[in-house]
Amino acid sequence: MAHGFDGRLLRRGDAGYEDARRATMWNAFVPDRFPDVIVQAATEDDAVRAVRLARDEGLRIGVRSGGHSWAGNHVRDGGMLLDVSALDDVTVDPAAMRATVQPGREAADLLRQLAAHDLFFPGGHCVGVCVGGYLLQGGFGWNGRVHGPACMSVEAIDVVTAAGELVRADPTQHADLYWAARGAGPGFFGVVTRFHVRVYPRPKVVANAVYLYPLDVLDEVFTWAAEIGPRVARTMELMCFLHRDADGEAEIAVTGPVLADSDEEADEVLAILETCPVRDRAKLALPNLRVTMEDLYAGSHAVYPDEHRYAVDNMWTHAPVSDLLPGLRAIAESLPPAPSHVLWMNWDPAGGPPREDMAFSVEDTTYLALYGVWDDPARDEEMVGWATDHMRAMAPQASGIQLADENLGRRPAKFVSDAHLARLDEIRAVYDPDGRFHPWMGRL
Ligand SMILES: Cc1cc2nc3c(=O)[nH]c(=O)nc-3n(C[C@H](O)[C@H](O)[C@H](O)COP(=O)(O)OP(=O)(O)OC[C@H]3O[C@@H](n4cnc5c(N)ncnc54)[C@H](O)[C@@H]3O)c2cc1C
Image (cartoon, rainbow, N blue to C red):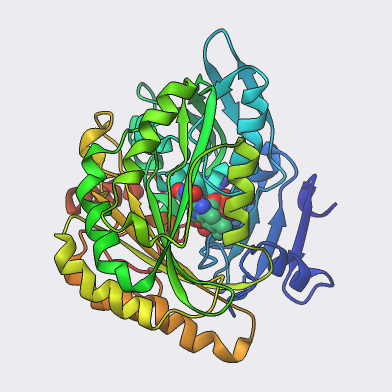
């Protein structure tokens, strides 16, 4: 036990250092960046000790919870990589409709624990993603169109500040820090050791639909998806995926997971997917399926399999679909083999719950994200280029990006409003005057 840690401290060159560094990444495309020190915190006290050690040694800190940052934001050159994945406690207070969750807990696991109490939280769509990074960056999750970005359900955080003090931040104390924690994402300047969240009644029915369309009706399908967007029930997440099938043919998968309170409601909500003007061109149509949350997670996991190399980029947009079609066609033509894919999601924040005052401030009608997936390191540059260059080309149609799928190190883009970025800088100057915590890897 070095430096009084309950967990482990590894310096560059120590046996076990490289395994520990790699293990912090879910993406197999591990960056060539090497922290001087890795601390694997076993307890909240360890997180405090680590920050104090970093302060004493003049180290900058990158924090890791679930390691699902595609870019490996926590893996920086020099300084300390503080791994808090072992902090994964959950408490549930069903009477108060509240829960607390530590950053290393998978959001999917939190949902399972809540389900035992007939409760629910808008956790992310995939297994593995932990609440640490997910809640700080905003969080678009199951029924997120009903509840808003998941960070809106965070009522307080416990956080180790750059001064090495563990404080509670909420609307009444350290309110600026609380404001920043809801949207600063990979540029947050503190170590969150616990989130205090509001939870909701569990939707009783989980349904879905799947339609597969050939690529030659791309214009018709996306034009229709954009047109129905504002009329889609909040309980449905209309997602269109562009990908290649097993024979290498590009196709469009239209899906509509629904979390509703009755079978009748689910039927009603799904019916809109039958209105596609090229419905008769669907190669496959499964218009009304009853499924489980575990089925939904399995479906997402199939699209984002483990142990592959990933490069991603994204944009929010409210541009007319006619302006987006040329870009979508260009992406489709250059689409790498599956599991690489493109996600088009109907988000429509204007129709959702009023947004609270928080750092999170960039979102829009439609979300578009490219996920390049490959195995051969020789293709790294090509695949990074595929995701990044298409989003660069479509930047004139974008209103900003979502930090969930950020690629800021390669393509800086707007991720909060200008006013909120300025306020984040001011709050950082107060809470982290020496720049102890790494900021975002790029910004405009
Ligand atoms: C397969 C996959 C599916 C995804 N699906 C979704 C989805 O459905 N919805 C969605 O919104 N996002 C999704 N994401 C994006 C994901 O939410 C973000 O990458 C998120 O940051 C991951 O959180 P993490 O704790 O696992 O990652 P980490 O890589 O551990 O954290 C990301 C960054 O957040 C900061 N951070 C993490 N923990 C702390 C902490 N305790 N204190 C201070 N700062 C911290 C650090 O800067 C860190 O670099 C997905 C990502 C992947 C890889």
